[in-house]
Image (cartoon, rainbow, N blue to C red; front, top):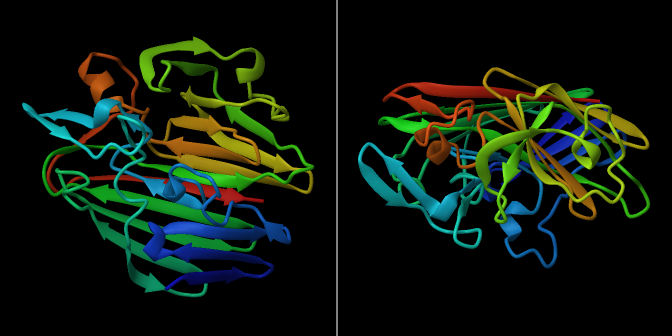
Length: 283
């Protein structure tokens, strides 16, 4: 069952069965998202729509989680690594739905994340804006992070301009995992003034980011506002699309924070405690 949201000329589709994702957004008279799995993708479930990441974001090196004296192995779904959380390729439960809003709930499968937890999200559409609010509640002490992974559509004959208000980016290794250090943005990595993407092929983590990020087509500008613990933005720009991913923590944040790296955004929840974040798009 899909849920359609309507607000004047704007329309959205939420697909609870496909990871509770925002499957479509028609704004300004045209589709703005990659609205189906991309042909030829090695991992179709992460190649479309806009999905919630949690209880981790990005890659966990080797799928290894060391927590309270125990080591756990997560399913490797990106070469040897675990990527983008435990929520995006499993069915979610619809708690409430109306023509303008849907609330979803997921009890995390211990096979995907051994520490459990309950994730909730609400997606609300109004004329000219869409809000995504998410939370994760721990059932036992656990590390937690949340983020969103939207795939914005780029037509074959158009360019996109992207603004990310961040002065630093993480140094990544050959497997696109943070090494624990950062450098000042410069050259093709400096998105502070909203340059056109052109031929840039980015897959980078911008840290200490300030709201909003912006993506602009020739006919529409979409602002991505975020608040609370959101503090990093990943920009991924393969041909035909662009992903601008706000998150509360860095990729592999648990390992890095355990090694003494500061500023990773890693949160530690006690049983019953909650991490919450909000992202709002406006156009």
